[in-house]
Length: 195
Image (cartoon, rainbow, N blue to C red; front, side, top):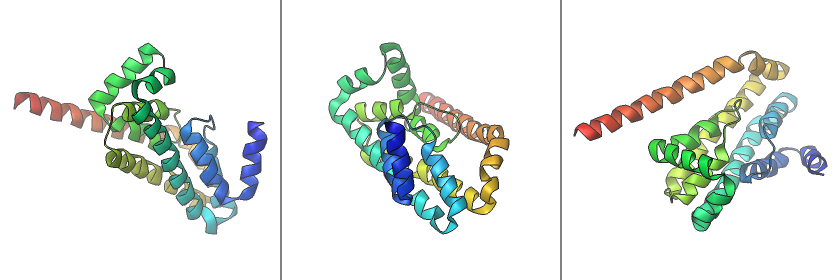
């Protein structure tokens, strides 16, 4: 039933990207569908590539905002239902340590299925300031979706092949950036302790 619903949305066009991005961001398991739709739109209808990316970005922000607000107001009860006790404690420690970086990395990375929803729930349950949360999600999704639209637009039918062929290089770049950010956070923590 879910597959037929998704296929019906795909037939609609760019608006489908908006709806699917919302569904994906609130927790419906549609891993990679938004990314593929943006690439397909960029290849088949290049004039709609950036519109699809914009709609995906807005849809993702709306869906993540919904999840964030549910966790914000549902607090610990919502977080308890979203993850088992051991994992929840681990994610909360990561979130306390690295803050919104835990949201940014899975939101910007198109290849590795990282647990974005758990960190969005953690951000809401820990009452992260809304503007900071929205800024991080917006930045990550703009980089991801407009980057995919650009690749699809520039490379055409070779876009998916390019991504597959260079997947580990791109993942390596994202991981290197993440490690750099983690090193900066640890360096800043040390400076605070010394001061």
